[in-house]
Every structure is written in C-alpha cells, then in structure tokens.
Image 1 (spheres, helix red, strand yellow):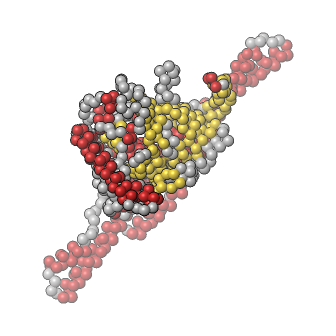
Image 2: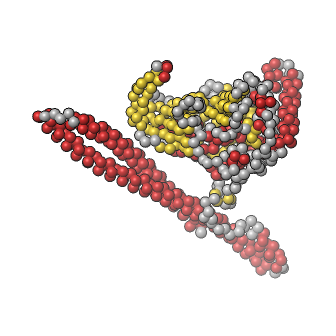
Length: 602
C-alpha cells in the first residue's frame, strides 16, 4: 500500500507540467482570438468607410474613362466586402467555438485537479492507517509472545497490551466529495469551512437631533469631539478599513495578468470597488482606541489574511497589512481628517495605499479621494465621493488617472461617475476605464487617439479615444436581504464583528461598547464608551507623568508615545513618507495563544 501510494503521488505530481502546458496553450489561444477580434472590428470599421467613399464617388455620375474606372473599383470593393464579411463570419464562428471549448477544457482541468487532490488525501490517510495497523499487529504479536514464554499473562493483561498499541489509531475514513471540505496541509484532518453569520440584530429606532450636537462643531476636527453611539455603526474604523478587501478577487485576477497594463486595469477597479460599500453607509465607525487591533483571517476561504492596528491617537492613524497566498500584498496607513462645514461633512483620508505583486514585482501606489456627507442640517443624509486618483506602477512606470465626478444637480452625466485612462511610461494610452463607484467598472482597449476640440474655459484640447467594445472589470455584489435594517451592511461587513475564539485581547470584536451597540443596548453602550475613553485618557496621563520623570527631553518625548505592538515606524522606500510597516509576529503569537504583551485597553 505504501508503494502504491508513493507511486500514485509521484504520477499525479508528474502530471503538473501537462496541466501547465494545457494552460499555456489556452492562454496563447485566448491571445490569438483577441487579435482576431481586433482585426474583425477594424475590417468592419474601415470597410464601411471605404464603401461610403466609393458610393459618394459613384453619385458624381462621371463619364468616360474616369467613370469606367470608378465602376471597376466599386465592383472590386464590393467583391472585397463580400469576401471580408465571409472571413469575419468564419472568425466569429471560430471565436465562439474556441471560447466554448476553452471553458470546457478549464472545467475539465479543474475537475481533474480536484479529483487528484481527493485521491492524494485518501491515499495518504490509507497509508497512515496501514502503518497504524502494522504497529497494532506487532504489538499484539509481542503480547502473545509474552504469554507463550511466561505462561502467566492473563486475558486482561493481553487486552491492555493490545489497546496500548492501538491508542492513537484513527477511525477509518471516508473521502468527502463536497467542495466545502478543504485542508491546509497533508498532515491535518479534513475540516469543513466555518459558516459565517448572515444577520445582526436590527437597528433600533432611536431619535436624536444631529444638529443639536453638530452646531457647536463647525470648523473643528470631529476626531476630537465625543459623539454618542447613536450616530455610529457597530464596527470600528479598523474593521471599515478591512472592508477594502470586499472585492479581493480583483487582486487575485491582477496577480495572474501577464501584461502590466492589463494588471493596472484590475488594480484600478479594486481601488474604485472600495467605495461601493459606502453608498448607503451614513453611520460613523467607532474611533479605535490606541493599541486596538483587528484581524481578518480568510486564508482558508479566500487565500488572504489581514491585520490592522491603531498606531496613533492624535492624529488618529491606522496601519493595515494584508497578504494573500495568491501572490499579492496590500498595505496602507490611513490618517482621517474630518471637518464639519455647516451643511456637509468632509472626510479626507490621508496616506498611501500599496499593492505589491509577487510574480511580477510590480509595486503600485495610490491615495484615497474625499468623502462628503450631505444634508447634515436637514433632509436625508447621503454620501458622495469626489476627487482624482493617480495610480502609479513604480516598477514599469505605467500610470492610471482616475476622476471621481462630484454630484451636480445640473449635470447630465450619470451619478457617481468614474472615468480613467491607463498609460505606459511614455504617456501612450492603452485602456479607457468608465463606470460608477457604486455599481460597476468597464475597460476598453484604445486603438487610436487624437486631439479634439477645446475643453471648457481653460482652452485645453480634449483627447478623443477610438476604442474597442467595452468589457466588464467589476460589478458590485447585491446587498443581503434586510440590509436596510442592518445599517446597510454588505455580506462581508455582517461578519466583521462576529465573535471569534483565539483573537488578540485588543481585537475590535472584544470592544464592549461596540458589542452593546450591535445588540441594540445603546444607552449602556454610551456609558461604556465614556468609560473606555476616560480609561484611554488616564493611560495617556500616566505615560506623560513617566516621561516627565526622565531627565533627557528626547527620552521624555519617547515616553509620551506608546509604541505599536505589531507595526514599526520607518521611512517608506517608495514614497519617502514616515509610515508604519508590519514587522511580523502576530500570527505566530496567535498560534501559540501567548498574548501577554498586549495592553489592557478594554
């Protein structure tokens, strides 16, 4: 059985290059089909233009040799059009056939891969059982040998000896075909994926006059103003930051791209998708306490895990690090500045987001746009996103410029519109992006660009792009049933505050005021919120007293600041900014369950 298992495992591994070759063939075929599709569009476009020009010449009714020549050219052009149409139709048939076969082959390859994994798991378990049975048999044989030699061993002793040998033998296994079963390594038992919650308690109907509180806050930074939980949603800013990973599959797709320009399109779509969760979310997330953390471990379901830590309180700053088994890393440090302007509230995230892809070493950076909450004084609150984003690939020099159009009552454009252009290092446009930040994004390959008319009062010339048919990059997932009574949370957001065993004692899930608010006990939550904020102020005063006892002023300043536990301050090599980078150790500490170094913040 061991020999059989080893040989089977070797053969299944040996099939790897064949799978890779098949995938490479599919990619090459897909590239050729894309070229045919491009030629198809060009022939149709230029053929129609040629036919129109010839028709115009023919309408001039010229006589003599010129007329004969025009009729001759027209006849040849007609023959060319008929032949081209036949070729285009054949190409279209080939395209449809190739696409259908490509999907079939991919499904077949995936099925074979999954079957191979299940067989490997079954063979490994059988080999283990075989070893256990051999050990058990040897143990029983030894017991019988003792009985034969001494003639004094009782049946009870014989049974005890046998069961000692069988003590760690597992039960016989069955191989599940259900895809919900996965395993993280060959040595672990098969464990079903955790079922996440799909509901939280409905939001209570508490009435509170927002203007009565906000009227004294005009022009001030809201992070320094105590606010009741009535204006919050039951998650922290760290959890809200983790929601950027709602559409992580866009980064998964980007990691597989062979073209850096196409990869840029998926990175841009990911950048835009982070705002789709905000469209109805007028509630304010809880300000994290200094040293508060939040982990989002979705490695088994989606291949990634994420960690956030509040690294500064004034100004409030959160550091975030996410890494995926599918070839990408995302990191950011965000400081939120907010100002109340009377009729609206402006929220300005400061800091740079980094996306790094392992295979290509492409390193992208971008910043966030301004979020505005309207109708603070009267009317229904609503959210808008506006500004411009430059996404830069520091490895290749590629760029993408995105524009988030602010809402205007007089504009004829679709609301929440986003447009963008992907350019190489020389400034040549390759893709045009279009869509909305709350619904979907599409991309089109640029075939030709030219300067057009003037653009508004500035007198600048517009660039006109001739593109192929647009393709979908990203589309927003529908909200869960009953989302309007659950703070308009997405399916991911509903799981963010779900209690989990083994998380750090500083994790946002353990924050008592936030938990009370989620349970609908808002009065108790307000009292608990005041207690936590006073505890934080007392801890800061204590640090300042300790710093004052130090003689050197530099030591005093160091004493005032509490060092983050999982992130360290350094200069970013790409942007030159002073940032906090994940230094490691969190997941290893969780594995050990050793949280002694964590501060008592709750």
